[in-house]
Each structure stands twice: as C-alpha cells, then as structure tokens.
Image: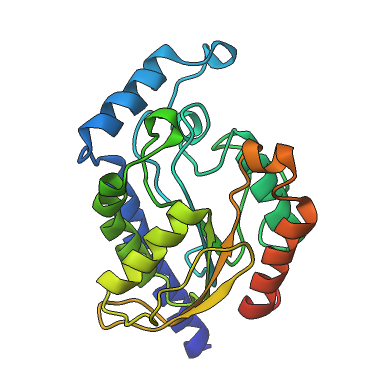
Length: 249
C-alpha cells in the first residue's frame, strides 16, 4: 500500500510540473515571425472554421505523464493545432497519427477533432519540435533551436521514457540536438534519418534518459496521398515502439 501511495504522489508531481511547463509554453513569444503568423491565422481563419475560436498560441504537449513513448512532430498546422490547441488535432496528419496510435493501443479512440473530444493517450505523449504554426508549414532551423529547450525540459520530466518517435527529418534533427544539449555523446557519424530506422540515444548528465529513437516519415497529406507512407509502413513503426515500451497497462 505504501509503495502504491508513493507512486501516486510521484505521478502527481510529474503532472504538476508538466502542467507548469505547458503554461509557460503557451505564453512564449520568442519568435516574432511565428507569433505574427499564428495570431494572423487565428484572426483570418479558414472559411469552414469561421465560427470557431482559434487557439492562436504556442501549442503544449499532450498525453500521459507516465509516457514510455514520446512522439515528436514538426509544428502545429495553421488550421489544425493552431485552431484546436492540441498537437495533431483537427487536420489530416492527425487523422493518420491518432488512428495508428489507437491501433497500437496508445490511444483510447481513433479520432482527434477538437481539444474536448475525449481523446486520451495511454503510455504516450505527443509534442512538436516547434510549438507555433509557421508560414508554409516551414519553421526555420533557428526557430527549432529556440524551441529545443522546451523539449529538453519535457523529456527530463518523463521518468518512464523509453522510446522517441520522430516524425520527419526536421523533428529527427531536433531530437538529436536536444540530446546533445543535455550532454549525451552521440555516435559518429551521427544517425541518419530514414523511415523505420532505429538508434540508441544515450543518457546525458543534463537530464536526458537513455532511449531508443525511431524515425518515421511524417503522416502529411503529401506523403500519405502519394503512397510514400502507407498505413502498413506507419503501423510497423508503432508496433516496434509498442514492443520496446511493453504491453499496454
């Protein structure tokens, strides 16, 4: 009984610290170009969402504080997460991601259409390498570098983390940079992005745990519509992640 209470208390502390970090992220205005774009999109809106109130701020992470798996995407979509306030929610990429996570037992439902739709992640957490919607969906390397400390702090707050899945080459590079910044010594030559490629991320003295990094093509319409990424290819990534994390609780 004492051990159970200790685990509950520890979990509550992690959740509180993540909540504080999330609040800090939503208040960030460090990148003028991104701030201007995200707020303009929230004002102008897409015609089909004209009656909705857009989030229009930096988008915090979403998911289980006890996550064994961290999913890292590119950046919020202007009319997706920038509208809903939750990563990969309300756009076609999110349709693919959460359906796949549901099939692998990481999500309680296959759809993610709004921040209040009841979606819960089990053993997983989802973030973006850059937390604000960028023009043309293309953040700059400097904007990624400015956001990296948020990822480092979030990683350090996930005591059960075993696997990181990077969606796309941009996110993959961000993950490697974050581990370096946390003091980890990466192999040389550095790991190269490739769908389904897997690497070991060593622990770093700055808070980075030892974890497996799996890279995947991003589930963008450009990749899914052309067959560059198929459902079978995507499911293989999450099946491997599930094997590394362990069975669903």
